[in-house]
Each structure stands twice: as structure tokens, then as C-alpha cells.
Image 1 (cartoon, helix red, strand yellow):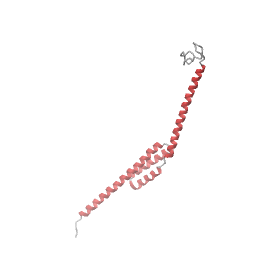
Image 2: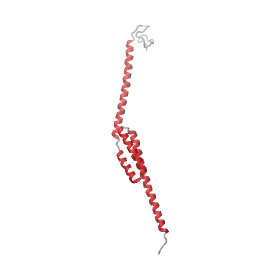
Image 3: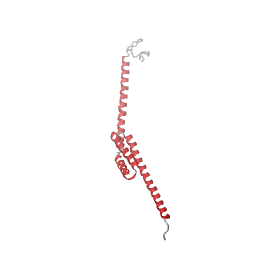
Image 4: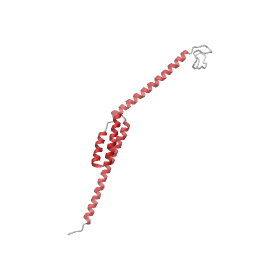
Amino acid sequence: MYCTNCKKELGNEYVLCPDCGTTLKVIIEKTKIQEEQTKQEETNNDVNKQYQASLRQEVLQTKIENKWSTYLAFSIFSLLCCNQISGIIGIIFATLANGDYNTGNYIEYNKKIKIAKWTLIGGAIFTFLMIIVIGIVNLIGIGAAITSQPNTY
């Protein structure tokens, strides 16, 4: 700290300047007020950041629709009719995603619901391709059986 009159450098413990006798108490009080203002600004910034985070969370909550029941239904259908492995994985991730949605963890919800979705899509594609392959194999087998029988006429 410096004296306002003679500009001599002084420590914070001085109330009067030892050279010119100027009262420094006002300067100390101004410094305390500035420190309090800085602390108040930091507190306001923290509160503002928390408020903005809660607003972002509310916006996310309104934008994200809980689709777990849709994926759960597709998973059960896949389990019963198409591909049991993708059905089980879909059920697991749809259920986990629902838990994350209910606790407000929307980032994890999005990750898990995407895993459920792509597992079901992959399982459906795999099942469809297997039906085509089995159909082709059956057609080749039937064609071979027809051509291998001797002519009886």
C-alpha cells in the first residue's frame, strides 16, 4: 500500500504515514470494501453458473423424450420372434436407460438408448440376412433334389 499524500510505500499494518502523518484508515477500509465486492462478485458468478446449469438441465429435460418403452417393446418382440441375443441386450439397455432418465442423467440415458436402438437394428438386419441365406440354401437344396431324381417316364 502507498501513502496518498507522499506516495511512500507502506505495509498494510500502518494507519498513519510515518513520514507525512496522513491517515491511511480510509485506504484500509476501501481495500476491505474492494475485497468484499470481489468475494460478492465471485459468489454471484457461482450462483449464476449454477442457475445456468439448472436451466440447461431443464431444457434438456424438455427436449429429451423418454423412448425406453418403445425400445423395450421392440426388444421383447425381437426376443420372442427374431433374435434372442439382440432382444436380451435391448431389454437390458432400455431398462438401464429408463433408470438414468428417471434420475435425470440424460447424457447416460442417450448413450444407453442408442445402444439399445443399434442392437435391435443390428439384430433385425442379421435375422433378415439369415432368412435370405436359409431361403437360398433351401432353394438350392430343393433344386438339387429335383435334378438328382431319376426320370421315371
